[in-house]
Every structure is written in C-alpha cells, then in structure tokens.
Image 1 (cartoon, rainbow, N blue to C red):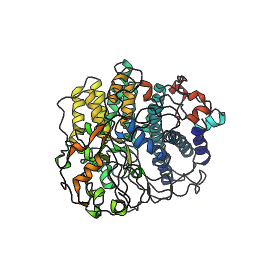
Image 2 (cartoon, helix red, strand yellow):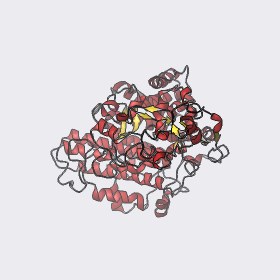
Image 3 (cartoon, rainbow, N blue to C red):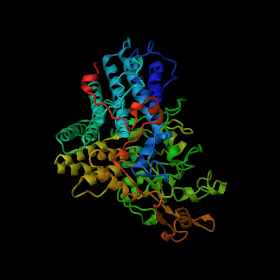
Image 4 (cartoon, helix red, strand yellow):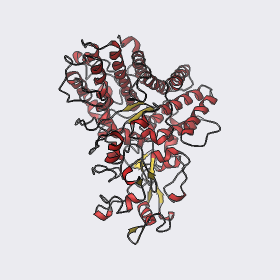
Length: 598
C-alpha cells in the first residue's frame, strides 16, 4: 500500500509543530520547530493540534462536495461514474480522498506521540485536551474510511507498523470491528477533553463534540450486522440515544436561529450558539497551501469573486433535490414559494437574492448576475466571455460560498485570494444530533420523542410541523437539513447495511437528469432587444424546457448492494492485494488488541 503508507512514513519522519502565535489558525513554516524545542508550554501544546483542523483534510474536498453528493442524488454533474455509482479505484478524487484520510490518521498518531513524549513545562490538562482533539480527528477519519470503503485496515501505531516492515501486509478489518475501534478512540477522547471549552470562541473540539460524533457512530454501527432490530442493534441504538441526548440537554449548545447564518463568514454569527460541533477551520493568508478553503472555486459561478478562479457553473443541485424541497426550475420565480428556509440556504436558483454576498453592491442578484452587463461586467457577455446560465438543472450551490473578497475582508478583517479563503466547513452540527436522537428513538419505539426533535429542526427552517413521523420522514429530513454537506450518501450506505433493496429503489426513483432549453428560457425572461430589462421583459414560457433523464436517471440501472462500497485505489491494491475487493476481511478483538494506555 505504497501510497497510503507514504503518508505514515512522512508523518513519522517530518511532522513537527505548525503554530507560533495566539491565533487558532496561524501556523509558521513547517521546518521551524522540532519536538526537541517545542511542546514546551500550554500554548505550544494547544497550537500543535491546530493544523489537524485543516491541512491534512484538504484533498478530501472534491469527494466531499461532488463525489458523495452526486452518488446520493443531490448533485448533477452529467453522466459520470459518480452519478451511475460505478466509480473505480483509478478515480483521482477518490484516490486523493483516500490518501488524505490515511494522512490524517498518521498525523494524529504522531502528534499524540509527540505530546506524550514532550519534556517541557506544559500542564497535563493542556496535553490531555490536545490529545483528545487529535483522537477525535482520528476517529472522524476512520468514520469516513469505513463508511466509504467498508472493511479497512486499522493502523493504530505508525512506528510499530514501519519498524515491523508490515506496511504492505496489512489486512482489511471487518466493519463492525472498525466501528468498535472508532468507539474506543472516542471514549478515550472524551476522557481527556474538557466540557464546553470553546463555544463562541473557536468552535474547537471539546467533550461534547466528541460525544456527538460517538452518538452518530453508534447509530451507524447499529445496522452493520444486517438487522436494525437485533439485540445488538437495539443496544447500539440505546447508546446513540443516550449520548445524543446528553449533548442536546447538557452541552449548552443550541440551534442557530437563522439557518443560513450557520454557513456565514462572520465568527460572531456561526460560533455564537455552538451548533457547529466539528468543522474544518480553514486559514487564509498563511502562505501554506492546503491550509485554506477553496470550495467556492469548485461550486461557485464564474465571476462571483474577483479572482477568476471559479468553475462551478455547470454542476449544481439536482432536479431530485429540488423536488424534495417542492420547488422546480420551470416555475416562474415571482410565483415561487419557499416552504422551507433551507431551500434558499442550500440551493441558489434563478431569481434569488442573497444579501450576505456582494454586500458592497447591495447584495447578490441572480437575475442580474448572468444577464445584466452593467451589474458586474467582468466575465459577462458584453466582455466577450459568453457568460451564461450553464447548470442544466437550474440551480447552483448556495452553501460553501463566501461571496467576494470584500465580503471576506469585511467579515474577518483578512483578505481572500485565488482559491484561498477562511469560511469553515462544518462536518457535524447539532441539528444532525437532533435527527440522530429522533431516529434512534423511533427505532426503539419512542415515536413522540422522535417527532418532537424532527419538528424542532423543521421549526428552525419555518417548515410546517409534521403531525407524525416515520423512518422515511427522518431520512427525508436529514437530506433537507444536510444536503451538500457531504453526509447524505452515508445515510444510504448505513441503510444499505440492513435494507439494501429499499435504498436501491429510492435511488432508482430519483430524477438525476436535467432540463433541456433552460438557458434560453431564463434569458428571454429578463432580456429584450439585447438589453437587460428585468423579470417580465418577456412572458415566462415554461413550455420551452422539458425534463430529460435519458442519460442520468437510474430507473433501469443494475444497482446492487455492493455499489454502496467504493473500491480502494488501484495502486494500493497492487502494492497490497490484501485490500482487494475480493479478499475477505479479518476479525479483530479490538479491545484486546489495541489500547490507549495513557
């Protein structure tokens, strides 16, 4: 497994410390510090974990925003291997994601070892907190690995594997054992982490963030044996309920009142309630590539920022996701009724306005952006770039956008740059834990509690409360709440553990296709005699467009349960055939084999 384990080797040989000032996100050059002269005090120990919040995760981004979101039916990007669930081990985004996750594991292990072996004056409390954060990130990496690839090796100690020379002889471990390893890792993290340490300050990982992840891990593990009603499954669901409820009732966190504020640049907004439990905390202006967020470049339309580095026009939220929100691109925008705040905060459609973007221009106007040459001339038709509505579903990402460089500087006092900005990316939110609790309650015959927490999530979005709730309702709610956040594919994965045929039927029923004729209809609506007039320049004529799912819909596709497990990168299988798809995993008694004896 040359490529996976090159990260282990690099981590052991080269990881030093990457922080030098009081800012949570700042890091100096990587060669300034060594374990011999760092980790000397509480501040240095805390800052030694900073880079685990960004750099090692950078190559997960494209799988996170496009791969998994396309597989689950939330995103349209034409007819490719992700949309047909046929991605293989040669896919570049898959390889990058895999290697990045192994790098996270390796670097977490090394940071933990460095802190434990340090001889400075740092307090044990500071060391415990930093180690607890690193353990939680390690657990998150394994949580993504096992849900993506299924059975995976467990690399508990990098040096032990390297010294033994067994890095190309590692065997896949059964999924249930990997989940047990994640649970053991999070239990140790919770033992070390303080409670309520960072609400309103940094949104770093504390006890309750680790506990929230543990609740979600138990919910996922519950079905891994093939049944969600077995004695073992009920025990896992009971644990999921217990941990989720503790976070809900005792963490001091609450749902951010306005859904769209969860994804804003301003720390005073998104950190205030502590809703965002675990996030990638990106940094701009460090000069260190991979420390920064560049998601807007992948999902934003050309011209939304000043740097000419956005190419997300032709890919966007799917017709099926819009169906879920009871909205359609063929409806005249002036007649559009948003029944759920999450639609506007997730899906940007023709005619939408966003006051949080382009604030110096009075807000971002999706009528004018594409068709009014006077609104933002760079990149528009008047300047010869043939700027036009490209995404054939009639939608673009609203999440993961920060707007313009002026928006960035106004919110943070820090300049953005080409493919470089500081908008956090949230991996685990309190609303997710509300839904984890609701699902576990419903599966253990506590329907009233399930309904209550589903409706609390809906109430924040000003969506009509449900009179009763089913498992189908909860999975729909998870998709509405978490769409485009890299999570919905994994709901299908965990359900495929115990009800694969139901999941397959749902995916086959999705509208994964596009509209033909959408660009000309939009332009006709706002442009007359070659000039932008605005809505109603010409009559809205929905007959100009027609839904086309010929190449993308999976109605007649041969989907099997095995397609919910993605293969390892081909290069890894060549180096270590033990991780091949046709090789059975081994069982490991996790508690007897591994330990965190500190």
